[in-house]
Amino acid sequence: SSLSELRMLTRGLIKEGTIDLNGEDDMEVLNISFYTTLISSMFLSTVAACVIPDMPNLPFFRNEILRYVTTFGIGSLPFAFLGFGLSVPGLLQAALIQGRRLVSEEFRQRLVYHEAGHLLVGYCMGMPVAGYKANDSILNAVQFFEPEEGIAGRLDYDEVDRLCAVSLAGVVAEALKFGDGVGGFADLSQLQGFIARASPRLDDKDQQQRVRWGCVSAYTTLKRHEDALEALADAMTAGATVAECVEVMEEAAAAASAAGQ
Image (cartoon, helix red, strand yellow):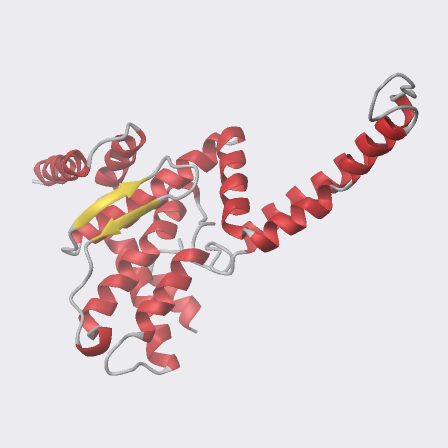
C-alpha cells in the first residue's frame, strides 16, 4: 500500500498515526478547552450562588440581584466560548495557541521546528525566503516569494512538486524531532489549493503520488541536513533575521560536508 511504501522510504518514521493531517490535535484541544470552561463555569457559578450575600445597600445590585447577575454571567461562559468560536474562529485558535505556548515548552519547540522545516526545505529547493514568524502568538509561518505562474495562475508540475515538499516539511520536521507531527492540517489544506492549480490538472491518483513524494522528499532533505535543522531552530528561537538564518544553514552544511570528507 502507499502507506507501507511511505513508511519504508522514510525508514519507519512516517507511519499510520505519526502525522496528524486531519486536525485531530486541534479538535482535541478545542474539546478539552470547551469542557474545561463548562466544568469551571458550573463549579464557580455554584460557589458564587452560595457565598455572595444579599447587598441591600448597593444602588443597582441590591438584595439578591448581584448574586443572580454574577451566577448568570459565570454560567454563560460556555455559550460565550461557542459564540466566539463560531464568529471569530481565527481569534479563538490564536488564543488557544497562545495558551499552549504558555504552558508547554514542547509545544513552543514544535512551533519553531515546524517553521524551521519549511524554511530549510524551501531554501534547499531554491525557493527564496521572504520572511518568517516562529514565535508569534497569532501567526507562525514562513513566507516565500510567489512562484512563477502560468496562464490564469496555473502551476507547472515542477513547481507543484516543490510546494508539496515544502508544505509537508514542517510536520516532517516535527516527526524527526519529537517522533510525531501534529501541525499538518493547515499545511495540507494549503497544499490542496496549490495542487488544484496544477496544469495540466492532476487526477486523484496523481495527487496522492505527489503528496507522498513531497513527504519523502522533505524527509530526505531534512535527514540529510539534520544538523542544519537543529542550528536553524536555535537561530529562529533567538529571533534571527532571514539573512542570519541562511548563514546558519550554510555554515552547518559546510561543517557537515567537511566532517564527511
